[in-house]
Amino acid sequence: MCGIAGYISAQTHVDLATALRAMAAAMVHRGPDDEGFFETATRAGTHRVGLAHRRLSIIDLAAGHQPLGNEDGSVQIVFNGEVYNFQALRTELEANGHRFATHSDTETIVHAYEQWGDDCVMRFRGMFAFAIWDAPKQRLLLARDRFGKKPLFLTESDGNLLFASEIKSLLAFPGQSAHVDMTAVWDYLAYRYVPAPATLFSGIRKLMPGSLAVWEKGTMIERRYYQPPDQLPFQETAMPSDPVGAFLEKLDESVSIRMVSDVPFGAFLSGGIDSSAIVGLMSRHSSTPVKTFSVGFSESAYSELGYARTIAEQFKTDHHELTVSQQHLMQHLAALVRFRDAPVAEPSDIPIYLLAQEARKTVKMVLTGEGSDEFLGGYPKHIFEHYAQPYQLLPKIIRHGLIEPLTAALPYRFSRARTALVNLGLDCFEERMPRWFGALSPQERKHLAAFLPTTNTADGVQFDTTADNSPLRRILYFDQTSWLPDNLLERGDRMTMAASLEARMPFMDHELAALVSGLPDTYRLRGKTSKWILREAMKRLLPAEILKRPKVGFRVPVNQWFRVGMRDYLYDHLAAPESHTAVYYHRPALLKLLEEHTKGHKNHEKVLWCLLNLEVWHRCYF
Image 1 (cartoon, rainbow, N blue to C red):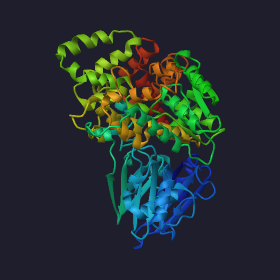
Image 2 (tube, rainbow, N blue to C red):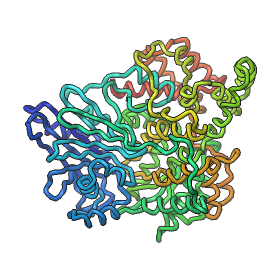
Image 3 (cartoon, rainbow, N blue to C red):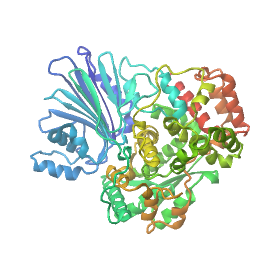
């Protein structure tokens, strides 16, 4: 796990060595163990090329320095991530005559590129973002893993192509300045994050998950090499004789290969079924107690520490706990916005960062349960979405004129049902998807915002699925291509790397995803039972109280905090004269949101968290 950066520049008469080092220094937290640089010029002398690397040493601690080259140094790579099947690939490559100088997975990528070209990415089982300079072919290859676990940002201007693991690294290059993309702000108000490929910074974009970008002779071409299998309708094929057993075997393998490490490691443990399953399987493959790390809150209704202790005791782990308060949030929020280079979309970013800091005292890598919900159908919305079409058969006068007003009047404890009925009433699939976890509807945005987007808003790959696909697969595809990479994985990467900690996610193995997608939908959702196949697989491993408990999610009590200890903090950021973003909103609508929430009349925590973080982001960069 590392940070990478680099450039291809037409500024051939400018010394860019200092700029390259500044790009690396901007993300030293991603790689505190080592740094390396490579600089050259194209054969025609029209461009300069630079690669930079910051290293967090996990595999081959002594010899994994980057940039790393092939036998004659003509092909150079900087790499962020892990390739878990690198040993098997190395054996195959050695049989084809390739000679290795290290034991690192990085060198395996170099020789795989020599052997199979750009298609080498299809052979990697892991998480990665890398850049390869191929001097003989005078081309730069950029690649990102299938699901976007590792980040890569790009910007092109004034004859420069810049790339980096984090946006702050791009902004460290001379001449780069920060400007707000107001269309991205408009989308942010709906999604609570900015859908790829855009960012809140004008001119800076994400390389899409499962994509390659090739620079050659001054031209940049990007293409997708992978789409999640849930994009397409289920096809009847030969199923395993024991699907649950096959799932458990593949998940167990996914866990075991992610335990390959030359440094101490552990696991984040929430007490939910996902992280509990990971810890249980890790215990099978560890000769010493697994180190587990859990975070909770003083507000008992939000804390899952008791469930985490149950799992820790069952598997006799070396268990560590941390309690977080609203003071932690106010203390760390601005710093975490800088680490993320974006608003902190989820309040859970803060406890995850603090937990990563705690874990980093004794380990350098952790396994997490991230991705299970988005591949196995773990959210209530996955169940509700099944009823969208039948519900929309009701006359609109009944839906909008009778049912929705009645549910809107229900107390807060019925908020999930209220949200479900409002969203099920949205006829447009593209509008309904972000609303399940979103902040504001189009009408609400127009009521609050004092601006309108100047270009079309997000309608990208997350909606690139067919209408004849099942409701479950359509919503899972949205989650896998938008909600997960642009929100949860950005959170996981930035918050752990801010503490110089690597996080690995066994549920996001592409072979496991293919196996599950090849089964009928009932193996994921069965009636009102979510993640059915995981629950079945875990019956012999986990206690019933973990398997049967309802999904809680990693909830942070900002609803209460905004009304008490953080009330002044909220008003000072959003409504005071010093606010950068107050001009974005109609003031009466903004004050109404604040008043309704702080007086306890309504719960606007998602919207207010979204607005608060946008303001903090502006204060950090402008």
